[in-house]
Amino acid sequence: LAKTTQPISMDSYEGQEVNITCSHNNIATNDYITWYQQFPSQGPRFIIQGYKTKVTNEVASLFIPADRKSSTLSLPRVSLSDTAVYYCLVGALTGGGNKLTFGTGTQLKVEL
Amino acid sequence: EPEVTQTPSHQVTQMGQEVILRCVPISNHLYFYWYRQILGQKVEFLVSFYNNEISEKSEIFDDQFSVERPDGSNFTLKIRSTKLEDSAMYFCASQLAGDSYEQYFGPGTRLTVT
Image (tube, rainbow over all chains, first blue to last red; front, top):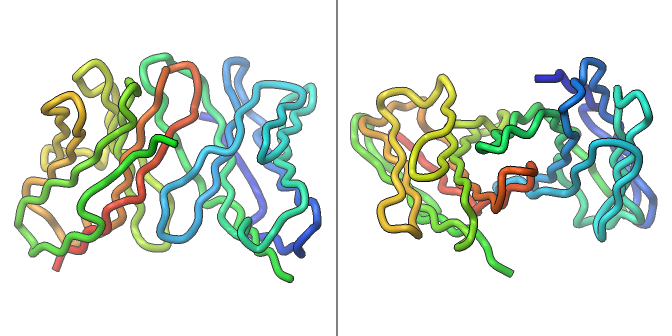
């Protein structure tokens, strides 16, 4: 499993774009990059998954450079309700059930 | 929108007692998981379940733990003889297909062992 490194915490203000970068220097060819969000006392929630270049959905964008050694989760125009822990996970799909290995994540705090 | 449900939301039990945590995954999902999170710590994988059998388990998932999908809708986690260190939030998750990491988590059961 590729080791991931992400900032412990980040602060932002409502309406700003937030970019959280995750480093995964030893990512393998078959590995995918996935981001989850977790609010206190709730289960994690899937945000986005990608393999290369850029992926966008209604919630976020995921930017992956050509060497894939890092990735950036971009949250457009955050609000107070985006205050949560964000996890970057890296791993290969096995087809037989894909366990999630969570790190400590990035605590994002959004203020007025 | 379909969701994963878990019962009870909070369970208090005495050390050495058996507990069963229940989950109802999303109905057409094929892969099922249990995770736990001790207060203030990381979310930890316990076990994955597919095609009516365990597909992977972690070191935490020892002989005191078992899982079952008894009736095609419920997915249960049993802890035979609880220890103080089993106190944690237990999350059930389900996944539609094996070609992604998109898992749907339930709200969790807070287990307190006294």
